[in-house]
Image (cartoon, rainbow, N blue to C red; front, side, top):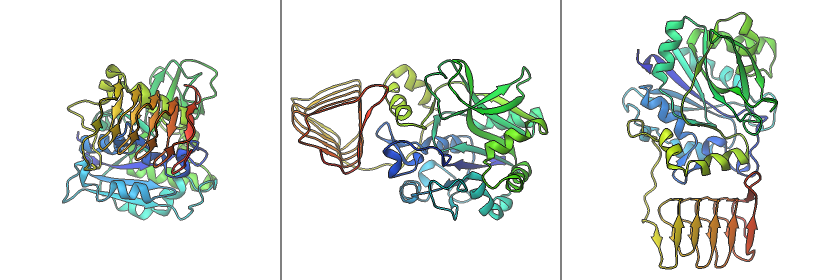
Length: 373
């Protein structure tokens, strides 16, 4: 059964989540990823590749960058006649308000949800990076007869990572017993991917139930409460998975994809990741440049040394400068003799006078957008 029987919803991060620095200027879905993509490209491409062409994108705050990037949605290979990507908003734009959550946004747009002619809905987050065929998820959901099917990923490093994620407790029949916050108490956990498949009617009933119980309940909260009443199943995801709910998560996910074997799990020829393209000149590498194991976007001028790093569009790295294990976002300037290591440099930043910037792999140094050092 094709996933065109479902419409898609791309949800935004819970208001309790704040990614240091980067989040001050844009939602997580707008974060630059590997120089070329935005994080939201991954759920949208998964939906497009699965044959879904009616998609709602919910934005809670600072919508400009998401709206600019998505535009008409045509670059996601969505049927231009009957397909549509809609940006939907909540009236409560206070980023830190406990009332500004996903259920609030769905409630305010309930009439649009009710008008969708598809029988099913697949809800995916804008803050996680993974590849998934939603046709498989939908087929499993329908054949099992479950009320809700949740995607989860089994990890063996939950003590160190996935700190802001939720975990699911599963019985032997893949039934979900409960959803809990990851407290970092055990290595092996089933991490909730905040991805749900259900009928449109079930989705609407959960929205209404959450509103009746508490005005600050999220979709995850109400599904957890309903675990005893509804048939809620887990569906295990295989392959690359990253959750970008902290600065160290974003840093680690970006740099681990420099490993070709890991990257080839995520980027498959038969499963393209679509994005809005930017036309610019190819990157110029000067005689003094040395670039090793890095992603370098177009439009850059590289005179210095770049190792194990992600370089965004239009970045200038001058002679004698060294960039190691770092993420340099678009249009940043690294001047002569500057050493940057274990750092994230935001867009349009200029590092001129400070010659040595170093963080650690666990706590990367963040340089503000448009800042001059």
